[in-house]
Image 1 (cartoon, helix red, strand yellow):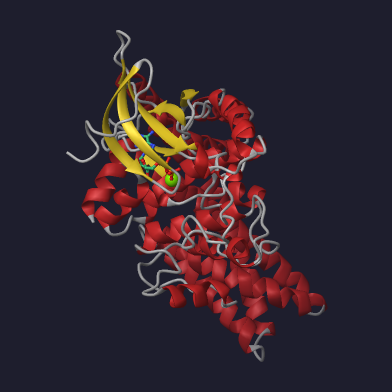
Image 2 (spheres, rainbow, N blue to C red):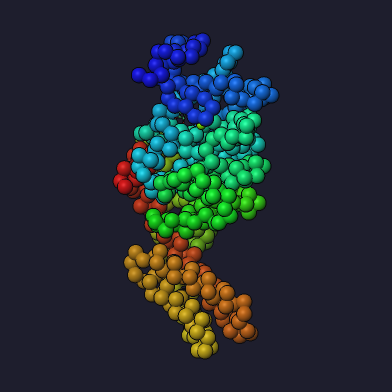
Length: 471
Ligand code: ADP
Ligand code: MG
């Protein structure tokens, strides 16, 4: 077997077994501790001669810092040793291989799976960003999976690239230009923001099966990197508008126009706030407490909206929980809150009917005034279509899309409408917004209901796995 026996490095306290892989700077071996625990680890051997001369000492200091870092989505560095030739990093072993292999054995990942992975990567990047640590060599090969049964991402190789310039003394580029931000390749001047570009490339590759600069020859690749064309996203597979928006904003060539770290963490498609985590359950519970209070005070609308916000945290809490009994307990509670929310919905809905009737008379007046305003008429038509859709069972999302479409138009027209028409238009916009908000909550309740009922016992990992094997 390649890599076994001959040529295996020796290291105190460990028995090295097989070669797991090698990258730009190092070779990684699987090993186990000689101690009674026989703990399985991965040992990465970095040749000192591949480092910048001044860097070895800085690197050792930094490794000491990395040793203190604990994050569920960062490969844990357990310890390190060194001798004349090498530095040895003793790391947590990741049995699931790397993200590159994971993507390519499946050709592409469904948006839902890519989103869970992206949330995990973003949470690791946020943690590092808060500590002023950049990665600088983000790519699927440097993102490992804890296991294939419960695939959790683990970011590897970070805090390292700072000590290894992408350009060596002979000005030869090291690493993969497929993932490097254009400013890194072209200007040789860059900062932490290159990590955002690389994140965009990784997401692009996960969704479309190949990185945006994939090329048949080096000159083709160079042309693509140096050009200033906007990165075009393939039309297929179909993706949500939020997902496309994020890709476009990460893959912005000019780092000053690229999405910022803060906006990335808060982007609706990433939505770190609602990522399954230890905190999800506590946040859900706190919101329920508020909802119950409003409910007791008789404020049905406020209670309903708080229940909905709570459900936004209960679903990730369910995903996060691994203990079957505790999961069941959460599920039972969620069912109870969903049914109270349904009751509240009925109460709010009857007062909404009144709103709707008032809305119809305003619509009539507006329509009269808008006879010679084709754009306004068209927008009002869309609003009527939205209301009609709302009456159909299971068409809430379509109705919501129509509401949003007509609201977009009406808001534009509102700015230029004169006097009385403006007043009426204003009332109409408010009515429609209230309808749209109400629909959003209905959709949310239905989805939480569905999630709570169909969520597999194994939770997140299971949902990730099944959607991967489904395609
Ligand atoms: P380099 O700095 O040379 O790029 P990496 O840390 O990226 O080295 O490791 C190279 C490869 O070794 C990875 O792509 C992965 O396949 C494998 N590998 C690295 N670390 C681990 C680990 N902790 N567990 C399992 N495999 C690993
Ligand atoms: Mg690597």
